Length: 282
Image (cartoon, rainbow, N blue to C red; front, side):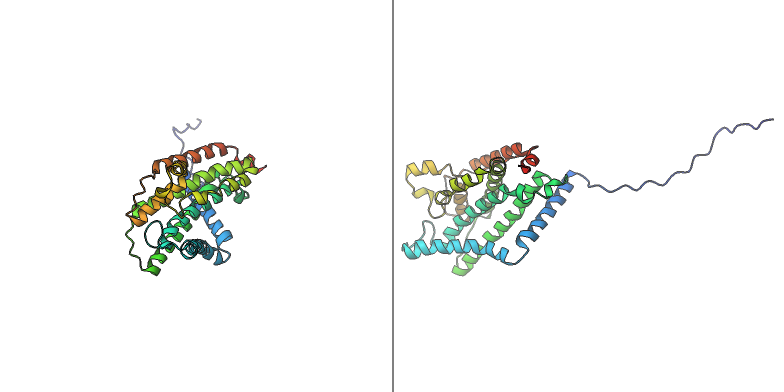
């Protein structure tokens, strides 16, 4: 008789699981890793070659403030600044804010060209390149502001009663404006190379119109109506409100600065999205 077929067969041996490559938990973690890598790269290539790079970042505003103090107090013989009693502090609250905005806008505008070799890799995106430069240079300017103001207060024996929340708000809005203007200019300079030279010429009067060495309140009515549209003037006034405490700066509109900054940022990102790699080929 033929053997009967068994009712069931034994289960086949289980194979060990194939080890899989660990992936980041989500896209945010990948983005953070890329941004940190880009920041470290810029530190190494721009500031890390010598200590002089960091020293100049501090020396630039110090020399600018000293020059303004020499001109208006020494040469022109003014007995007191337009606000408070200390010339260096008054000019520091204007000069550093303007320099922070101007430097951030310029660095962000050049982000694509600076990161051109890395943007060839799919892992590096436009937003990564923009945020890396923005975060690093914002931290640098905040550190410079803190050191300069603390140095002036210690050197002249000033007892400052600052509103820290307003000072932080002024720094944050300055960084946001630099990001917005820089992102928009990033597209314009890549799409129209002549725009870089045109913007350099058009923005030169901004230093004279931003309240670095005057206050908005003392200007004629006609001048006030024109100057009010300058967002940097609002940032300087907001900073002085925070540093001095007694300065109301009623003309300041944080909503205007925030709306303008976010509008330029979103428009710049929309224009760059999907076409920035093509612009790099121009």
